[in-house]
Image 1 (cartoon, rainbow, N blue to C red):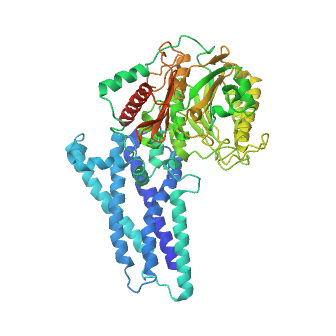
Image 2: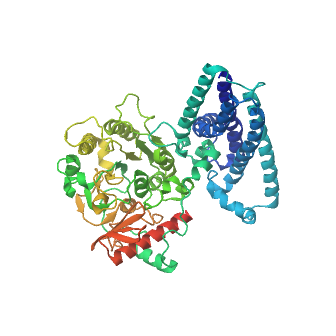
Image 3: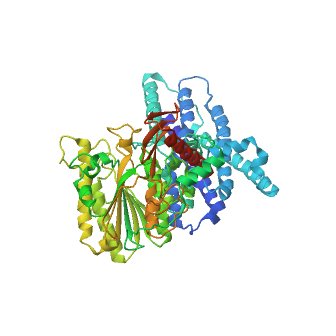
Length: 611
């Protein structure tokens, strides 16, 4: 039993040492010129620390088979473990060595980590080598061979240390029982390290920590990046293709006019400080001003008469990962995949926060929960937030729920952060994503005792109202713009494929608002970015799926919402829900609306394939 434990520990440690001492330093040394900032000792420590998180996942995968073999060895008379580990080390050396060297060599060309997109190139060696010189190919092949041999040698040495001079045996019922117990516990530990202990399984965001994408790529284990990419290599190219390119492009251009300037100014300053509040599951069903349940969100109702209130906004999809991209990139959600998981495409998306970063703003993303879920950390940093603040970055001891720190506590922190930035005279932009209005609906608030779902929204509304009143009493209010909207509708109580589910509020308040307005124009959630940028005189031509609804070019108001392999298209004539699987309209059929929705869907996937 002791030998088995030592075997597991030594082999796992040897694998971990390879990634920390060999793979990562080699990657940094070879690709150091890709960094836009100095790689200091402190940064090296951060890279190693965050890289450790994805390293242990790969080490857990690598240790699983040796664990099984070592356990079997304890119960058989033939001493096979040493020979088995030699063969296993050769295979491991080939796989890990190849992955390490290919990742290092291709990074200067691709600018993203090794993933499944390398596989198609194996079908055409000529195509894969067409863009590089013969010298580069020869040097790369030599480096690959050396890397494989070295890696195989490393894992072989690790195996020899782990196995030891004598094969282990389990003698007697006590040792047999203890060996089985060790095996079960070890399997459980490996599984937990692979999956993680959070509500959602691990993903590459666990190694993302910096607003410098290169540092995040240094930290991310290339083998894990490749393994994970195999699970998200959704079909994009050619999906939903129904029209010829000319027809699709012409009609799409009519639906989504380009960068234009608004004719009606809503703000009294072109460079306000901005707090963008993305409210978890905020549906119109909880907002009385939009015909929803009474007395759930009295502060939203009150504030809607103190600012600019857009009353006919439809969210673009049904999940937070889609909603974030719709709001912060102005990019339409996809019904069969989620672009936020396609990490190499994220830097190519439009970026609302980056627009303000380019204007000299201090940009921050705040969320009271785990930022690794749904690749939030990776996405927030990629779209231009200089700093990200998650549950581990907020003060200790704050009241928490299942998803993280309650929104009221985070809003108190936000107030202090805003005051500190104002005192420094900084221009700032902050994205705040809430979490309390989410199942299991447990919040430190009980005003609505007979409806826990409504009560959770009432709690966030109460916290929001208190934050607004505190801010109004400060000098910061004068130059502040506060945007409040939902990431999607409430998934409880409505089917995703309904017009009522899609309806969400959009409120803009603050001292920077020129005059109170109620705007009843039909629009999509993704139009938020272009509409605000247009008001501030900032170009939004790269936001091709976001329209400035206050511009004279916005002549055909409509909204586009997707659910699981389907869409809803709404305009002034009504709405149509279309199911792509059955190729039929499941609600309110209309050939014209169906046609327009299909045009958008085809163009969306065509654009996504090119990102």
